[in-house]
Image 1: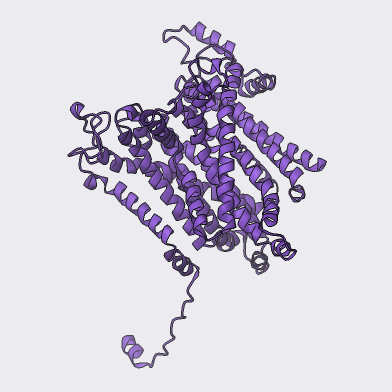
Image 2 (image 1 turned 120 degrees about the horizontal axis):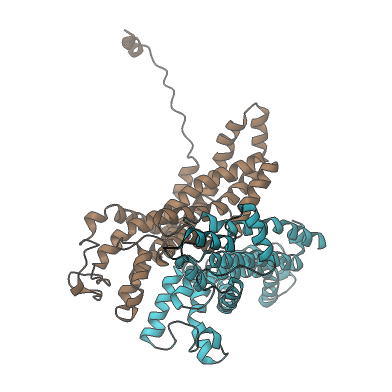
Length: 298
Length: 317
């Protein structure tokens, strides 16, 4: 019955409000025309896909060694990128290495983005003594050069993937918290926050709607710029022997174990570094593109 | 200026205190007993207790921290567990070696970086700008330990021009300022200079572009100044910030040299840290990190002070 009425009543069709092209549409439009950033984004995407589907792409088992085929040059039949010091296929190891290298580079930044934002935003929003105590503590960690802090922590905690992840996360929390705090302090004194408060909004609503909405963008852009540093540092820890253990393929560790081979097969030994370099530069260019597309200052 | 000075120093004292607390706690977040690496596996309980008492590990933590801090302030950083030598002496010798290449690297990086940054900022949008920006991005994205390896491959293995590592025929103890010894510094210093070069280039480019957009520049041109005159004004305005960035970069290099020193077996603090970590020599680890972090903190304050001297606007912040 109701179905019939609804069909018979001449419905007043309210056209859906033409949604104004929002902020994100603008960001995407600007990003699309930034050729360098798009190219970098595609490379990052390919590396991620390579890591995810490593089992299907890699031509050989990355851990199968062969004493007869040690240190083959690039272009050896069956070994397109040569063989490493234990006769394992370099191409397969580089493809599989993307997994751990990406994971160890990206995860700390994301965890630090989450924790650093909480610390920075609450310090900036509540201000006063809480801000002083929190930010001075952050300053202590900020007083260490990042490489030194990462090595100090993982050196004390001991080698291993988990310990590297913990150390790198601790390294990236202070810079993110500082940015979050300074952006939040600026936003907090804006007129619209005052207006929201006057119209009866509680702290929770103000933080959720007004502060986070305006603060997360800049913090996120800053955090993406740290991914490249994090990749280099994470592989650096493995290079020192503080990250993962052999025979797991990881670019930093591969660079370390191949270091003695530079007199025999120099260019094979340098390959893992090329992988780190390409990934790190792509993340950097992608982050630069995001920054200008999102129109973030600083 | 005096109030500014006092403010900076008052601000840094709690940070320095926090840094030393962190270094102290490093030993205690480490898993396992710090003594396990020196004790023979069959050590008796009495011997363990005796050593624990000698190293002071039997006292409550705050007391240990107090005693450790007092000693550290007097220049006593304890005894290396692995070698039995005083930590302070080892760290100072290593800091000297690291400073050698870090300062050289900072100078190279600053000169090249400000050149590229200046050209890029002055001719913004031109192909020169694009080239310089590419160099800057490459500089900040390159894994420097890999660059070090490539340097060794090219200049030592393939061309045979420069030694691949070490600090000269007699080690760092027999250091002399002649070509034979200096040649050992070149590859590590150039490798190290790539990071500050990228960062300085980026900063200077932004600074120069910003200054050229300010109103006083057309005013200077209207006054009849030619390019070189304007150039002098731009340099004067960009210098304080650029110098500050350079100072901070020196600090980062001091702390970040471990990877490059490992590649080149350069006997500096990074090398020492590596040994400390793999022999689980915690007093040495603690001492090295404390000295490096304090260097960095002090350098930060110095940079702020110099910047305040050069640029009165900084003082009013």
